[in-house]
Amino acid sequence: MEEMKQATKEELIKKAQKPSEDAMRLHPFYRGKIEVIPKAHIWGMESFGVWYTPGVAAPCKDIQKNPDMVFQHTNKWNTIAVISDGTRVLGLGDIGPEAGLPVMEGKALLFKYLGGVDAFPIMLDTKDPDEFIKTVLYLQPGLGGVNLEDIAQPKCFHILDTLREKARIPIWHDDQQGTAAVTVAGLINALIIVGKKMNEVKVAMIGAGAANIAIARVMILAGVDPKKIIMVDSKGILHRDRDDIKNSDFKEKWHFCQITNEKQVKGDIPEAMKGADVVIALSKPGPDVIKKEWIADMAKDPIVFVCANPVPEIWPWEAKEAGARIVATGRSDFPNQVNNSLGFPGIFRGTLDVMARTITDEMCIAAAEELAATARDRGLHEEYLIPTMEDWEVFPREAAAVGMKAIEQGVARVKMTRDELFQMAERTIKKAREEAQLMMEKGFIAPPPGIELK
Image (cartoon, one colour):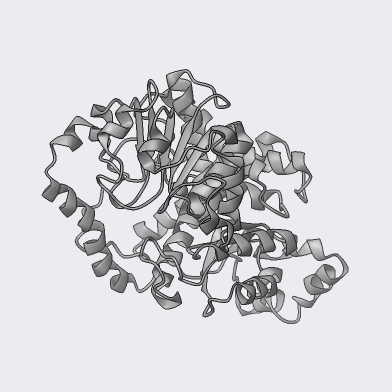
């Protein structure tokens, strides 16, 4: 943390700009980040009589008799779509479906390399939530699951809730459930370090978008008392007199106006943070969105999650100077990165391996608890709350925990032991990573120009 403090503002800006500069060179070099390659052995032209006509009619008839056999005869068991309308992309806003495609391809790449999941980007040319829902339902016969991505609120809530109710396959919105799982994992371990209990802490939530709404929902399920949560949006603290919310389309936000903030505190960020044990901020890029004096007004050993990108709501060293015991951000160049990529690959791996019909909030909590346990096993301390993406064993562990919770809740189509789930996930993820490594070694994936390879 001290080294980061010594860096000049110009150095930080230059470092933050480097990935964008490399992206502008490398995206046109590769012309995409994923492609389709054969999975089945092709021993000669006669093999197509097995893989296609006439042989393929036999598995088709088998699936017709027993629809669940589609998971045995096809890649549906491991295939998902990353679906977006491009209306809220990576803090860029409504940039449209074509402009959002590079993000969805990147997500698909992470799914494959970290979770062994075959994911394909699908951009929808509609802003109508009902058309979006209808399209996803039409697509579900060929998919094992759907990752919703970068959809504007409040329609993202309606789309997720409706699809979870109507779809026969698991539907997941990473901006909501993924962020919640990883944040709760960090919170579990932060509370262990400071010696506080989940059901006793006062939590200030800065920002009331899709991410913090979902985090609040999952935190409450994990044990946080909703009466001890104070949430702030762009117009101030949420409370029962907020008629601007009551009379809007934000029914989820109005729900939290009713169940949080027991003392009906009014005001803005400083009032919400006063005496809080924890602050979770997913608002607008900083710095200076949160001020040092507001952290100084928090309870003893405050926990500060400032996760706006590319710049957190307050610089981590400033939060520490103000008295924060633990600080987490959304950036990889600071300790304690709260990164969705720690969640969705393992969660989907476990979901697909048991052929689950849905992804419940309890499955998200199981993933959070396993993420937290992995960090404790590796040596928990104030600057290592949760694993990093380098700790690849977290993904099969997460998958096993999620699969077991799905079995326990009765939403899985198959049953396995925890060891069987772990071994299956580990095998699938290792295969994906080793295939990518082999293709790079053999030159089928060209080395990136201008990048120093380790």
